[in-house]
Image 1 (tube, helix red, strand yellow):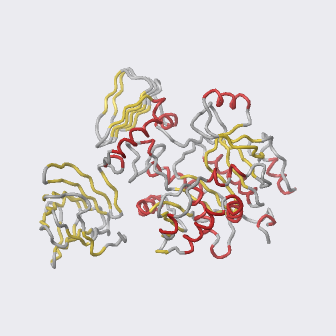
Image 2 (tube, rainbow, N blue to C red):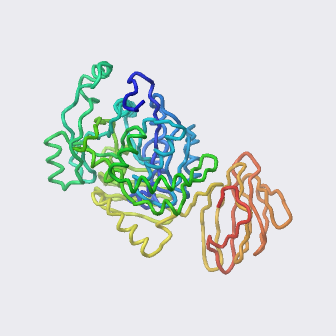
Image 3 (cartoon, rainbow, N blue to C red):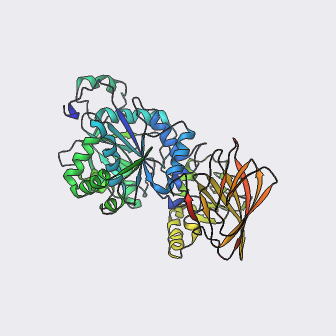
Length: 501
């Protein structure tokens, strides 16, 4: 039976798809390539990735999500999802960045394994909403339409003439196509959830055009959230960009799997043309005969695409200031201050962003905060590490924080999860001293294995094979003092590693 002929009253099989591969450079210095925006807590008490998963798990009939991310973040994704009791059905790891169309195609190919044809609910991992019930209601309406073969995109109801988003021009609300939709229409008499035909997609406008859109009505922001059957996506891609489909399928069919990890063939995937979902398929649908519709979304959506957007959703004082961390404000208005490592004092500022981390500080006019990408570009050209990593670096086994460094020495704090272990390794250019400050350490050094507890220490000679493990039930924390002629992270020869590095 054709998926579009499926009876509407059947319980839908919904396959959430979380796109978690973004870099989030516009929120530097808090967001970096090694720990990008989707893993940050910017609104509420959970990360944006965790919020996305929780919203999708609220959908009726939703399966465990398929998450598309990259190799470097695979354990970070799993750790964060497990913190909110969400285990993905698969974590598809892109071998290279090829934009969103190939990423969605990987998810669709994964979803149809075993002959299934679920409704894909595709959402970025780095957005937030303040009304999750309204979000769920809109998505479930979109899923009902998508089950009958439509491409359905959520259109964000605009509240200002925004120039940072693309727009969707939608027609008047449509009546339901089948008698069984009557109850749903009656449940939304104000037409908030009534689907509308998509007339066209519009690129990011200038300020005057955006104001005209808002005044005219019928224009909605494109938030990158869309719903359709897996087969509908694959058929549309076959029609508009068969080269992307063929190349992505070749990479997927040559995949390897390891527990939840699905790894498309790297060489084949690097040959896939890079293209966005919008350019490859969605913008080509209006006027093509493909049924493309829009469900309005009015749920306090924000993509937190720049520090100004973070200020908009943050709790504010009577002067419009939003402060996070150890912050003192005096005679300032409409200012965002985000302190992560030390006390930050602000005096006499208006409409300014101040973001402090352990190794970098950003100060910007709030209205120009999107231009932080120029700073990130300079960091990339200069090959500075502040582009990629924080001083505190997350690893599958825990984290390390580079506390101090000088000529021929470096000091780190290292935290190891209960039951976790670093790789069995050696260094050619440095020796290490370890001091346990919390928990219990199991230390392998050459052919010896010892246990150390708080205030005990050991020495790892240069060139000796060694490993640090935490056999306990609480976090292990040590101070590591490195000394030698070269202290780079690439001076590691691994012999065994639980994480496949």
